[in-house]
Image (cartoon, rainbow, N blue to C red; front, side):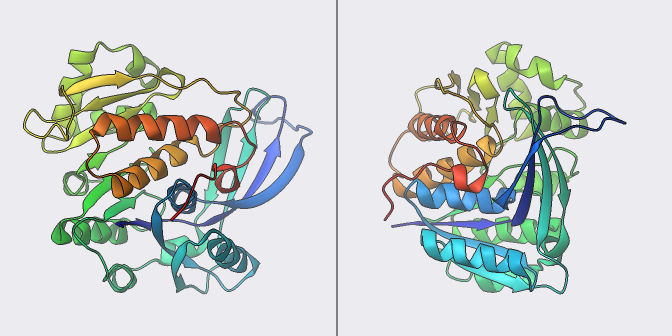
Length: 315
């Protein structure tokens, strides 16, 4: 079976559940909890728990946070390659309101010490049928190197360009076979690379031909999957690479869910998409997206990030 290789971040999440998200100058009462997170780790757990053999590449400190990461990887059967850092393991402060909406503050810590040389060592087992997935909470040169190695080996490369405030160049985009921004990230990328100003809140209401044209301008040689929260997602392919689909662009609706916490829902989607691509390479792309959409919906029905990822049959 193919393997999903994920290069990214591990954080210890500190979560406060509050009636409303905090405003400047406000002091709120809330309920505190802590647990594992980080976009890379969330996606790795999602890929593993949705059935794929998964290899997670990150950097950790010499502390209790690092031990938590190692213990969880072992318990979930997730293969871990972790560079050692003198900085503390990464952290995140997360506020979640009564409607499940969130805001997040990241402290990179050890995540900032992940080097391309370590990525090269960790990914030396890459094969042509594997999947490489990365995000933007680790040093960009290391993320770029992981995607480059994926391309060189003939693996499928996925780039989740999150968080939106990280600036990436055209060369980084062009390393992705599949780009998976949410509305905010898509808006930011259009502004930087296409010269189009589209408000994030308006992305879901753009008609499909126009949205497809924007995706083609953004990533001329690859597929774009724009995740739209409760509006599902939008898929755009090139006309010559439909990946088994009947058409070059289409929408996939969101699945109904009893939403408790949206933290990590995008990570659930990305991990499950990579997992499905690795496990079922002959399926039409729309089936991979439907699988990921359903998996992400289920992840919102439990509090937390990594530990909220649903457990399916794993190989």
